[in-house]
Image 1: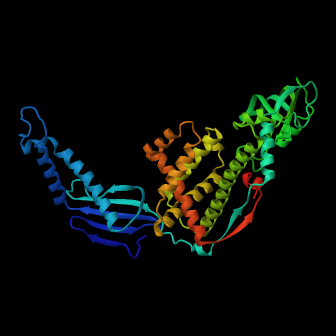
Image 2 (image 1 turned 90 degrees about the vertical axis):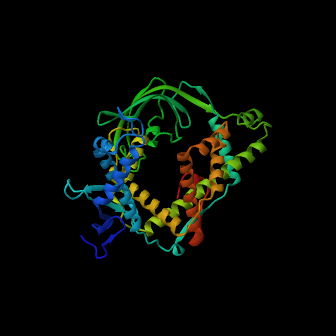
Image 3 (image 1 turned 45 degrees about the vertical axis):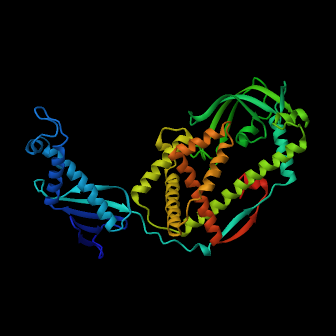
Length: 443
């Protein structure tokens, strides 16, 4: 279709026409006169006479006619390619277009023509009319670490240091059972469905509750066939809602005893003075840092959801296809599968649309509001990452030297800055959570 605003213009050395062929698709036709092409060809040939080396001629003394005869066709093709690139860039700049990806180029006109005429078809980024964020009602998380949370974490740490001893009796809740198991779906083994020497504490919900419940009462040497139904919302989509059968061999049943809360235990956790009070201070500090990160994640998710719901627009097909491929590849890697047909494609395609939409929305917010990247926050985040390594200075140096790695951190920081900007403009309200609710995503 031809848009009423489709235009033609003639520059100093080329003529361009622009058509709107779809909501986001554009087609430009460019014509460059043969004189312009020939002038460029002659200049390049003339330059070659000063540098080309041919048998029988001294360097810089090869006649222009010889150079033209030997290299004329090659040079003309190079000039045509260079002119096509430069004219395309100038036409895009002239029309203030923002192309997506690489254009589809089609040569036009008779091959014998001395003129250059071609058409370039491409998609452009959508014009996003951002919703007014000042009207957004956004919930933000409110939570704090209590003494009970610190005590609970201390008990978990004691549980991790549990001392186990084998018993010759039936397994009960809180006992540890060591098993080999092999799982099948409709008689076929599936990835991740089999393991040897797997230790599970009954009641810990390490495995599906249905699986653990059927292990109660087993003894060393027992074999048991366990049927389990995976929930509809199971984290591995290819297993969700399906029935599996597991052949289980019991190798050991153990009972545990908690270690005493003494200096030896405290020092095992890295507290040199061996004082429980010092351990509690460190635990509280760690829990508060974890809680703060969870609160930030909650607030960011709330902001992103509001931005996505409030800004709907058509996505460029080329960008969407690229994003879908990226999401598919990431899912196959995470699920450790090689067959793409096993992916929940509809679900992942929606995820790709959301991710691409939010990327474009964030970019538009940054552009329209001239939000500048806070390099100080970038360095703080790098320092925080580096602090978890034995040689933090090496990690910091890595991010300084790797453009790609630093760009990833810069992107995260810019997203955080946009979240902060939205919350400053919006009408936030607080929602209270316990520590457990926040860290276990119970909201």
